[in-house]
Length: 308
Image (cartoon, rainbow, N blue to C red; front, side, top):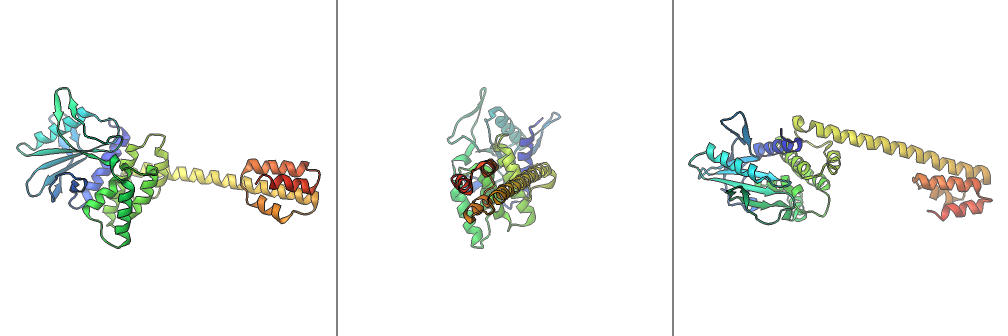
């Protein structure tokens, strides 16, 4: 059974390729035809199973077939070769090319081999691309009111897999709004693919941060409802936790000021400002103790102002 993150990646890419007009990967330097049409990524086999590639395109002018695979972790060479062979069997007598997009820790070509079988594939190293530069360029296109081209849309969807100076979930948060000017279905396709690729590339420990970002984004309802729910639940939990913390801090600040007021009849403005600007509970507790134990008002003020 496929892992959930792989299923999400497959579905997210399907959303993307179903909606992008003429999704030619030429923008990545792949010698693919300029005009392509999207084919079903499901390749039936004689057995009771099927091979599902990440994307399948056909050149409009020459009829060539282009199979797209996105690899985020350790490469499964046997699976890639099996997929290529299945596509070649499904389209006999037609030129079949496989394009492998590497999304993590892969920056130079290498031989795809399984036993004696070797696959000559076009390889795109997303992790070596300047993601920050592409993000800035796409921002400029949108800011100037220009339409994103099909190539721009593919780059936008794969931005989280590129090289960045910030965390992947922050890239998704910054890049997703750039799709807001697209038709609704296309926006959902781009954001769904972006989210699915990012989710697949992250470790289990990192994924909760992405889920929080995805909470209210227009990802595919039936595919990412669980992600959205997890993100919203995480956000609500953090909100509750933050609310409890703020309530405790408010009470602790009031307790410090009450003790100072009762013991010394007045609270200097400088001391009041410091106390009211602090929400660190451990500091407020120390100040409360100082307010209770200080021999006089000056000693209490000195203890508080010394630990700002």
